[in-house]
Length: 431
Image (cartoon, rainbow, N blue to C red; front, side, top):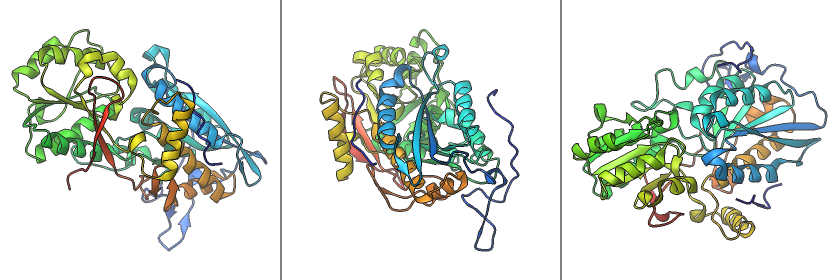
């Protein structure tokens, strides 16, 4: 895929940094008297360069996600690299958090090393990443210990910022913030909302008995659990193990036995939380071979051309949800222009769904750096969290105290007989 010109707005890798805990987990930390206290990790975090600010991204640049991250990186570079912020010029560095050893998918050790590289660079002021929630789970504490703000264009697992009963793990999200303050933000909504919206849509589609699968990764399991939880509340019988999500072996060579098990359960609907690289091509093919007419739904982790290339005709009919707004459904004039510019530079092809979210993350970074006007990490971090009514390609949003965007849209699609899938409707999660 060609890189876009958007014409936009100007674990072993863990290093030793000690941070004492301050009450609460917000940014900035409150002193209880109307002012703010500086977390110990954020003291004396001014850069050493008098004229350069560094911004890093960490995304999977190989494998099935490459088409997505090509678009993200091109947008980030266009928006940030070489731009002036006060007396400083921004230098952008694109880091790869995938590895050939992991079949081109994200690699936890590599992600941690990337975070350590950025944290140890005194002139690094913003870290954009990751694409995969599992990677963020490993690196948020590294960056928290270094007072480096993180902006994710794509992480949707809710436990990174908030606890959701039945979905997130014990101790989340506090366990990711050893300094007692928040340093992680995102411009995409969370999977409790996407899962709930998908379950409500499944109910509309006639689902009565569902089997729920996940790839056992942080993202896949969280999304599938959320879907199962809301499906049960809506009266859909969930017949997978324990009435929730059941993990499948992504390294299996055959899913015929699993497909027969699901068929024998009487399920009329299958929901799968997974990323593309988790053997989804073989899984879909075996499910379709056993149950050619069963309805299948999945989420944004497989919302990419590489998924359909792997499944072929077995992917036809699949319902897909996206925990945001797809490119052709953007409503802001700036968003529409971003999409039009991408198509013009890429032979009329639709941008991958997360491309515009990478652009929005870069917009947020540039705006916060401009407002901070300094190369002090804590001032930049506070500026990101102070974002309010920010006009972006995605529309207007704010960042709340937990680090989440106020945008909460979800959209539904169906693969008919080719890629890209057909837009079906805007989705709403149940109350």
